[in-house]
Amino acid sequence: MRLYSFQIKGFRSIIDTGECKVSEIDNIVVMAGQNEAGKTAILEALDFFRNGPSESFVKYQKRLSCDRTEVICKFVLEPDDLHFNDDIVDKDKIDKYVNDNKYISFVRESLKEKVENIKITDESRLLLKHLFHEEKVEPPKTEVDSAASPSPAPSALPTSEELFDNTLSYLIESIPPFSLYTAFTDLLPSEILVTDLEQSNAVKDFEKVFSVNLAEYAQVTDPRDRKIKLEALENLATDDFNQSWKQTISSIKDEKKYTFSIEIDNAEPKKIIFMIKGKDGTPLYLEQKSSGFRWFSAFHLRLRSLMKDSAPQVNGSQKKHTRFIVLIDEPGQNLHDIAQKDVKKILEETAGKNIQIIYSTHNPNLIGTEGKEFTRIRLVSNDEKLGTKVENVAQFISKEDKGSLDALSPIRIAMGLINIQSIFDPNKFSVVVEGITDHYYFSAFKKIFKKDDRIHFVPACGVDNVKHLISVMMGWGCNYKAVFDDDPIQGRKAYNYLKKQFYEDNDDLAHKHILKITNCNGIEDVFNQTDFWKFVMGRKRTKKDAKMRNAEVVKESGKEMYARMFLEKIEGGEIVALSKETSNKVEEIFKWINEKFAIK
Image (cartoon, rainbow, N blue to C red; front, side):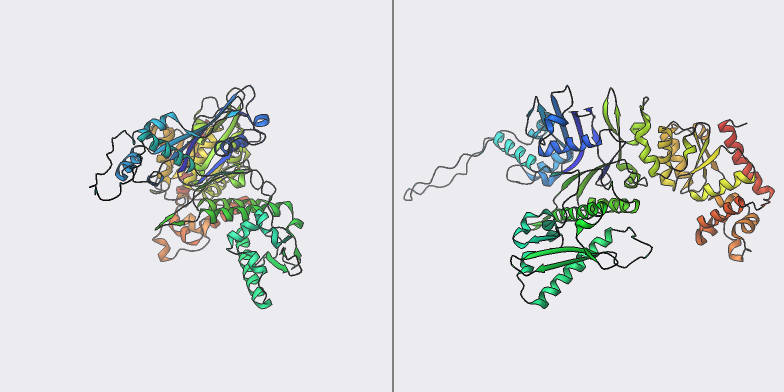
């Protein structure tokens, strides 16, 4: 079963979230929002669903003046979930049922401090019941040998009701485990007795990740053999950690920034000693490292262990994946920007191992905004009357009353808009362009032709990100326009999406906000060829170049670099006398911008 959606009622700041669907594209959901929005409450409620109430549930977690907490989780049902006993229900019948009923829902409730067990919802119960019906099953007839001793009476066959109840019990037991992490504190100990190895969660994770038994290593008496084994283990641990930790500690980039050191103290009682060496070669216990490094080390080891747990397990002739749902509250808070991005990479790698991850954050470095990453985002906001709400970006911006727009802040920053505050200034005019190259050229044109300084060109960093950027800008109530080239693959794709999504698929409505530059497969085609080679490329055309459009030329030789150099040239005060042909094209674009923004 795979988690499809959840709904939470009566829990801390939550009145009723409504049904919140998780990402169907991959296994990551990002709960993004400001502090006190209710992100932690969502994770704690999901933990309550699977694992029951925590010690502080009644005192801290239940919503004030609310006696009832209810958490419903809906899962995608797969045929294997019901094929645990094909003797009970015909296989073809199960396959047809799953095809017609893709989801199954379970609920856990707490009413007046009395916590119920997980049970199937009434709706799912009725649907599932159709698989079972009362049939009178006759036991097989056999010939009786009068000379033989009497056969024992056949055991009573289970009724359909009993089979149904057994199936429900099995399905509830099959709900994936949920694990909530509010901190990662299980470090490899500096020293640990061999007899205590089983008591350390970090050591057990370490042994699982690297498929070793440290107690057996301690029993190796041959010094050479032991040294070979330990060095091999150290190299494995070193390589694994350094693949994840990309942060540069200094200006010197070492091939191995950190090296694990594992020793066995033979004096009775025997001990295992764990240390880590930096670039200076000095061994330190993990407890001696920075708090950020300790957090990352524990986080890295725990998730590596979960990946091992989820690896295919051989079950007879089948390989069956174990599914997990990992809930993480505000990962990587004490880490440097680069290390935070390392955390995001590990989360993505873990999610690729059949593990669903739901994590909360207000950290832009942990929020992806490109391609499928945007579909992971769920905005968490808190309204005084409605409580905590969870919505995707499209749902949030489509509301008439958006309340506080702070929920969009982490996404705005993640999209690279933190240094372009003018976008959100009502006295400025924001023009969305496809990428940073367009931003450079239009900024240069604005200066060359002395256009209104309130016009700002906002790069969407790729055509796939255009729709996300405009969604966020509309959510913030920004008055925007957009200018795209007429590239049949990229520019038209962005235009057609926006036209359909926001302007009723109507060209007249769309053209009030979006301009397509005709006969322009890339922003470079705004220049005529003479201007392009003289002022942008800075060299003479070859015969081969003459056969190519400007936009095609820079694809082979550095699109962004030439655009940046052109802007730097203009910013540096160099006089560029563009031809009438090029000037007319540029003026036509700015004329449209001025008209649509009503700039005098």
